[in-house]
Structure formats: C-alpha cells, structure tokens
Image (tube, rainbow, N blue to C red; front, side, top):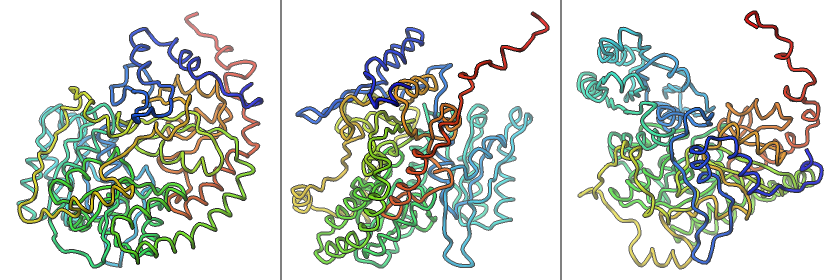
Length: 548
C-alpha cells in the first residue's frame, strides 16, 4: 500500500528474498536461479543468466499449460481447414476448444471453417484397458464422412502415450484408406516441462507432412511468411491489412487465419518474419535448411515496433520503390496512433505494469506500455527458454537435458531440387552492414531496465509477494491468474485471449490497446474491492466442526 502512495519501488533483491523464504530449501535453491534482478547488457552484450525451461517443483501452483495445449491449442488451433481430432478423454478436447479467441475469415461460400468444432474420441476406461486405436480409426472415418476435409490431424493426450496407442500407424492407415492427408502429433501432456514442447512437436509434424507439398508460387514481387502470429482478437487481420497496403504478399501465416494450402506452399516465400520466437523458431530454422528461406525477428505489437518491422522487411528486398511505399504507409498510419497516445498518456504515464505471459508476449507488450509512459517493473515467461530471455547468443551454452531429449529433433537436409538460397554472401554482408541481421534475437532482458525483476515460471505465491510489495497498476497474465489478482484490487489484462478486446497488433491495434489500458488503470472500481483476507471476519472463523 505504501508503494502505491509514494510511487517508491521496493528493493528487488529484498523482494526476491521474500519470495524464497517460504519455500523448502531445495525448492528455494532452484527458484533462486529462476528469479533474476536484471542489469543492462555488459560490453559483450551479456545479461544475467537465468534458469529456464525447467520442470515446475511439485506442489507449486504454476501458470503453465501442458504439451497437448501447446500443440493443439496454440499451433493447430487457428488453422481453419485442418480437421483436428483429439484422441483422449473429453476433458482434454474441451479444454482446447477455442479458448484463445482465435479468429479466421473464409474467402467464399464454399470455404470451410472447422474451428468452431471440437472433435475427440472420448476415451473411456475400457479403451484404457483394451486400447483405443480401433476407436480412433472409427472417429477418423466418421469425421471424414461428415466433413470431407482435405487433411485430418490427430493429437494424443496423456492416456494415449501411457497405454501405447500408435496414432502414427493409424494416421498412415487412414491416409491410405481415405486418400487424404492424415498425420499425427505425439503431444501427450506430460511430454515436456510445459506447452513449449507442444509447439516444437507441432512444428516438426507440420513441416514433415505439409510444408513443401505445393510448389505453386503465389503472385507478388515481395513474398513473405509471418511465423508465430496466432490471430488473437483479430491481430493477424491488422497485420495482413498493413502488408497488403505496402504491396507485400503474405504467402502463409503460422498459424493465425491460416489454411492447409498456405502451409503447403510456404516454402515458396522469400523471407520468414518471426513474431513469437519461442513457439516457432524451429520452423524458421528448418525452412532455411531445407529450402533456403532466411528468417528475421519482427514485432508488430506497438506502433514504433510495427514501423520498425515494416522497414526491416522492406530493407530485405532492397527495392527503393518498396521502401518508399512502406514509409508512405507509416506516415499515413502513425498520426492517428500518436493522437490516441497523446490523449491517454497524461493519465497513464508513470504507472507500473507487470507481465507474466507465455512466448514473446511478455517482451512485445512492454513496447506498448513504453508508448503509454508506463514502466514495466517485473516480467517473465510461462514457457520460455534461456534464449528467449538472454538472446540466441547463449544457444551453444544451453545444456540439453532429459526433457529436451524427449522431443524429436528432425534431421533436415537441403532439398536437392528446391533448395534456393535467397541471400548470397554479398547481399547478407550488405544487409548486415545496414543493421539487418538474420536468425538473430536479443531476448527480453536486453530491453528491460536495470533492477527490474525477471521471473521464469512464476508461481502463485511469488505473484502475491509481487502484488503486495509493488502494488502495480496493472498485471498482465492469463485466465488462471485473472480473478486471484483482481481480488487485490488490481486490474488484470489477459494477454493470451485479450478478454473481449483487440486487435492490439499494428497501428490500429496500438490505439485500441492505449484506450483499453487507460480505462483499466484509471477506473475507480478497483478502489472499492476489499480482498477476502482483509475482511474483518473470515467466514471460516465462524465454522463449527462436528469433530471439534
């Protein structure tokens, strides 16, 4: 409470110790490596080392999702015309049913959209005892007869891996029997330490079974793919609008507003632009090795970040006409965003934000808060790896543990007929001299202020310590944290599903975000909230137990 009145920030080292003191010694020792007080990069560009992508300690309440959620919910969820069947209990299938508010647009009356459906085999006890492959085959046949899709994806849940159902064999059988593309994902929930493993598994199977099936090159002079954009609340629509306005052809989006055909011809693009580094850097690396498509990191969250990303894409193509057109689009779009920022900034400047979200969102959204004059005092990822925090320069030093070995690493070789390097040494050197580097990401910590707290896989207990010590004006996380945080009288903005808002990408999205955050941090309603633990008498105190 005192921090809110004086705007004084607590000592981050003291806050860290307050978080750790409640844990058993072994857990505290591990968590101490995952809670870092940030400092600016040194002369070599190094930031403090953080322990990440490690299993959550048993008994600790975490934000994380499972491997199945990462595969079915994140990567496959936004694809409108691949029919996905979950092989497992009904609860897992229901969990993955459009919980992220993915959106899509069909192109005509004959275009299909399977996203509103949730198909599953509804495994029962007898399936666990006698095996569920027969039931899965029947489910695939029924789905095919009902929808006549061109592709069916099969996703495994925990029981499938435990009893040994061979979903890949079923997929091969059904592919031959039905004459359509059927492929499977061994994405059992326990397969990795978090949903990050599901992203990797999804990338591998989409790359193996779909990417490269169609060599038709779309029309357009500047062809790119956007990787790691999932069209939450319509973000992809805004990015597509800007690319079209600039004259840039979007070949494929992985996987917001995506289609099977887009995946199949993605290798015909000349550049991959990666938004969420964590969820899809695998796809960027594999497409470069097999087809010669380079990748760069972009960020369309934030007005200035959007302008910078458009310029980077135009810089890659080295065409003065494209560069001029991009500058014209930026000049047309920025004034409205700047007017929106000027309108709300007097009410938002100086306020404090915290972001604990998966993937690159905890990094990207700091850009928007900076544009509002707000300070991010703590941030972290649900499922990040060290390179997401410290940058890809640390990759050679990242230890491969047993959990990482559990995920298949594809051996990718250049395609003998279709490998076509888009950038020769001269062009790469020229672009590098101009500041455009390939396959590079500096990570989140390099852009965070000194003495901010960086926390990997934050727990519920640690969240409560942060709220008590810092009293932030807004906390950004997911649905699992939403109501626990709001009971403190602090607004929570969901950045996985955007609650009911969005889009927040691009220029128009930035203006939407400014106004939504202004409403949240300046609403008086939060001053009327009395947390249950601050009430004079707790209901539990009145209880009389018969056994007492």
